[in-house]
Structure formats: C-alpha cells, structure tokens
Figure 1 (cartoon, rainbow, N blue to C red):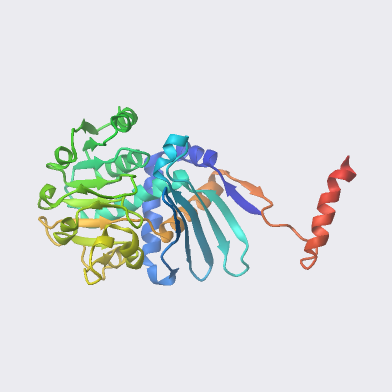
Figure 2 (tube, rainbow, N blue to C red):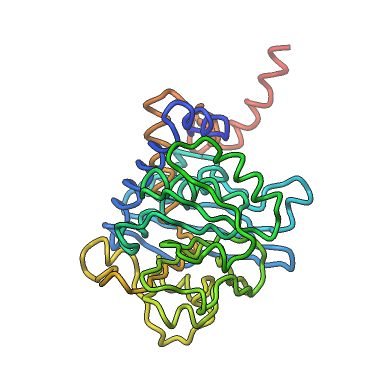
Length: 347
C-alpha cells in the first residue's frame, strides 16, 4: 500500500502543529539534507514550456530513496480560478521501486520555499535584520512573511504589488500577528528603502527588472524567489554584479534563475557549501548578498520526508492500493480479471 497525504491532511497538520513549528521543522529537514548534498544524484529539472506556462518534473535520489515532484507554473491560471502553481510528489524505495508515499505539494511547496528562504537568510543576511520589503503579494507572500517573522525576527514588513487587491489580501491575513508591523508602499523603491532584506516573489513569466542597482543599500540581503524559469527574471544584472550571489544547484539556476542573464564565468556559490563550512556566507556587515532561489528537487524530498514523519506521528493520511497486491507477482492479467469479476460476484 502507498500512503496518500492530501491537502486536507496538510491543513490538519498545520492546525495541530502550528505553522511556525512546521516551518521551523522544515528548515531543520532542509539543512540536514543539504549538509549531505553529495549523497544525492542530482539533475536540473525537466521542463515542458508553452506560451502560457511551464510543466516540470523534479527528480532526486540517494542510495535508499527516489523522489520527484510534478509542478506547473501558469501565471494566468488565476483568471480560470486555478492556482498559479499546482504540485504533487512521490517517494519510492530504490531497492524495489515501490512508491511508499504520494503527497500533495501545492500547499507544501509554499511552506518549503519559505523555509528555504529562511535557511539561506540565516547564513547570508545580517543577524540584526528586522525590516523586510516583500515585493509581490500573491500566493507565496504570507508564507514568506510569517517564516521571516517567526524564524528570523523580522518586525516590519514593507509591501508592494502592482495588484492592490493582492496586497489587501496579504494585509488582512497578517492583521493581528503579534510583533509584526505592516506598511503598504506605493512602489518597489519606497518598499526597499531602508530594508535589511528584500524578498521578490512575483509571478509574471517575463524578463522583468523588479529590483535595480540604484535601490541597493550596503548590507542588504536579496531573497530572489520569483525568477524561476527561462525568460523570467526579477533582478537587473547590475544587482548581481554588485553582490555575492548564492544558489541551490548551479546548473539549474544558470538556466532558470536571474543568473540566466549573466555570462558563464560569473561566479556563484552553492548554498550547501556554506552550510558545511566549505565556503563563506556573508563576510561583513556592508556586503550585499543575493540568494537566487529557483527551487530544487532536494528541497521537495526534504518536505516529503517531513510530511511522512509528521503524518505517521499524528495518524494522518490514508493507505491506498496505488500498486496492485498480487498473489502471484507474475500473473498481472489474472489479478485484473479476478478483480473485475469480484463486483459481479458480490451483486
């Protein structure tokens, strides 16, 4: 049997654990897997692009488990009443190929993306960072805002989105969060002025320049989340030139991230090396750092592991016959015929 974890299970998990606790545990799982980076067989995700979006498959494996995520990115979906991003994921046994877990990853991707941002910011932002600009107030924004507030101590959020309704939605969801001040701004420039951290999480599939070099200030950390596929960027190339740039998996980021704008010789550091102490993160208080985040399969494996562990502890999920249980493993046809006949015999 295969364990199925649905969106209802995720909502129950958050209700019972609390989102801050779940986010904190997600960071722990991410750090544990990034520290054993070289145990994994990795590749850039496989993508099918169209004029309106992209559908991707994101695999990763170690000696014991194989994992993948199916995910799309269609910015115009909101006009159809669908999420911009929808996803599910699988963990299977390397020894047998048996899928042990099938789980929703639409809600979970938002949680793991926010947790990944915090993991990077702990290494790259100034320890005293308390003010964050959040550019792009759509589906990911609440998760980013709450993760940075609860796990990194952000006290003031400056918000901007070209869609005022998105910002109003975010303000409503953050209203009443203890210790968090929210300020709505009229432009990106206003929002980032004086910010310690700038998070860009926009959705349009276009070569945009959300953040330009004239907006940078000494010591600023840029958390670039929205530039995550070919032809989709948020940062002006000069922002990258003036910063120390960190990435998840360099071969993928050079194709999909803001890094796609830069020449092949432009130097970056993979985040796992900083976690393992093999490379420096932030070197001084005035350095400008960028985390060019595109999302990587290892993060989804970490998220699936966490879901599996917490669901088992809390009695969530259900067992489903995704794979036929064969009395004779060589007789697949017989199983089909006998199973089809059972309802007729029962009638």
